[in-house]
Image 1 (cartoon, one colour):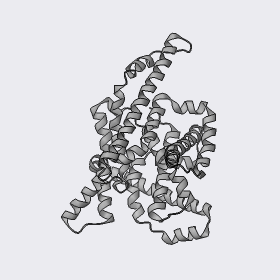
Image 2 (tube, rainbow, N blue to C red):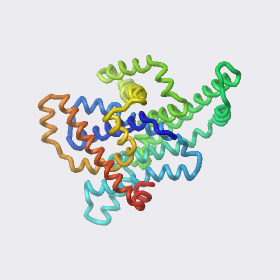
Image 3 (tube, helix red, strand yellow):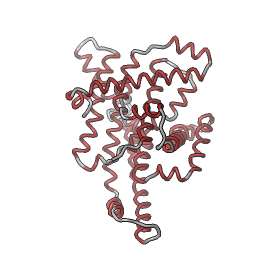
Image 4 (cartoon, rainbow, N blue to C red):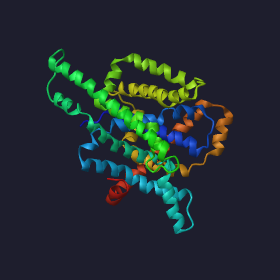
Length: 355
């Protein structure tokens, strides 16, 4: 299957913003920055959306396919996650090592490596969509050539809407189970990262539905939604909403949704175009898992508190943005390069990086 340029570029942009958020958080100790807040408003939702969009070719079609998907996530989680946990605070005894490993496995954030566990849980949850009784009917319809305004076409439309409605219901129940599971079982020990599963499942499943139902094409043909998102995102970003529940829904659901719609539209419209920047983003997009796994170690070497204080005192937002994104690009490229070096070893690629 031919690779789509905008998919690789959008993945690259998403992982670059994830690294940028972590550069602010871990490398520069930047606690007050509007640029950090802007990045934080969309970077993980966009990254999860792209993960969902690429989740189908369905891992639930075969046990072997699911196993391969899970190994690609759980091997880096266990190797890089545990190693990073030990490096940042090396224990003085064997018992201390065991305690560190146990604490890592039970932690909700897993020192930043929660993404691998959450994505593995999301992949497993896709099995639930096999319960949709209309899926097999739609697959049968898709095998037939359809023309508009024919009984077969109209039946396919009705079945498609019905299938989508059932899928949305399954997704809503799944999301509810994540939230309930975290509230009642995982507030202290969270081995499955149910907290972040609840936070980011809507964006993952939106990506799945976008691929399955062609929602990206629908978005392009309804430009009013792009306009609404382009205006709504900054308005909601600066909005002061006094009601706590409404503010949480706006900042964690609606505002990231608008941001995702904006970036998907921008990158999609440049599918047939190219530039040096987009080539770099496409390269990053082809190595997202390696970058995510390795960039934390790169951040350990960055201690820029002096530069951070200078940027904050200068009040020069543009300079801060340029410096942060340039540094994030260097970290991402170095992480991708290290990943490529490690993958040259068959043993490391198979057992530590999951194939």
